[in-house]
Image 1 (cartoon, one colour):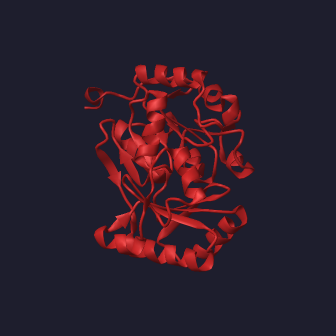
Image 2 (cartoon, one colour; image 1 turned 90 degrees about the vertical axis):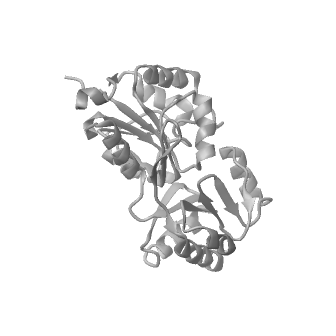
Image 3 (cartoon, helix red, strand yellow; image 1 turned 45 degrees about the horizontal axis):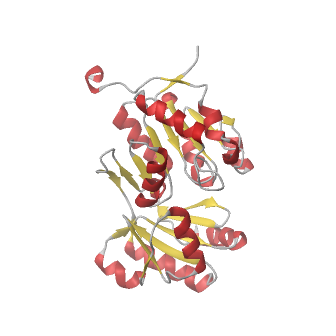
Length: 278
């Protein structure tokens, strides 16, 4: 008997979007059909809220969204379902460590819809802004930290070798955070215990689902826990080999409509309604 699924979790960059940062027409039509049938299609990204919303509008979706790799979950009406972040004192210490030990890396800070950077004119920041469609704010984290008690994430961008060195060196010094690569040049810094898997569990409870009823698709190490937790964990063809090995199956690349190919032949049924549960 075929398994029936009731919710879909999709990473954005490298998964839903192709190399040109677009969604294929076939994929968009399929996701729209699923939502019309009552299947939540959850975009689950390391992006900040406005960056996720940009893709939501492109895909014409209406489900909850997961931002900052699980640190912030917003419902359909964009009310907050989950909000967890790094203590600002830890964030300041971590950024100071990176600035001193890895001066070539670019470190920026995110809280709700604020993206705080040292220099908004830096070419790396401007390129990132074009990709995620958001406007950076130049400022000093140590000064800004006096007005907030947590940040949702820090993002370090730079050469792959330095990113891996930073991940290795910082891990024992900062047990309060998770250090997850979302690309060879990106290191996501989140609160310890927060991940796309914990976001899935929050929404699993909200929709009263079993793990077996959940599908997840991703392309990088930041997606590993999500892929492992899902009843059907799907790795993109462009994913690293370790991510592919953790998945139940591997689809085509993000430039070959991998999401569409992975989902088009699955069987779906909407989550139970509240009246059915009670």
